[in-house]
Length: 226
Ligand SMILES: [Zn+2]
Ligand SMILES: [Zn+2]
Image 1: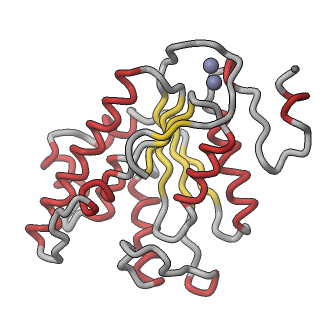
Image 2: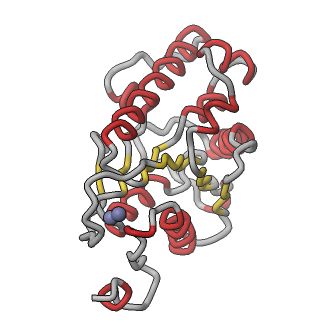
């Protein structure tokens, strides 16, 4: 995904501006994050925005992806700053009520080849300050190797074991967030998506709240009171 994508459902709230809440959608590779973000765009109104993943912007744009310590640190600094600036666009423009971040700045801890403290120090910020910028964190667990992790994504370079280890590190990095929801990999994709979309809806302001989700049987017309 590139640019800020917004939901396609019609919205009756008629409000031009919303106070934007950032929600980090994260988890290890292969957890279905991209598919769930696409479902969110089909399930919600234009007041739900999906931000592009900073790592994809950076690496997809040609940033060197080397395994050296130097390059890994440089890449994580670049990703951090790109993420902050994408978020600044969304928060500053106030067009969306919920900005779904395809990973957040705290994810960098899991990829940084040093201590968490050295990551924050290098970036001139703190874990507390970064956690505070997100209203909620939705962690989609990477399936274990026997639960069907796959290698479909061309940018995906991890083995199933590495992917699961990365998932655990990301989980630990966000653990201090007061609104940190973990969507279990034990559930099938439909259940995972339903749970994640309910968590997103909970962050919407009441004016935009009326959207039925794909798994809910009541017709949308009835739910919207039309
Ligand atoms: Zn709306
Ligand atoms: Zn609204």
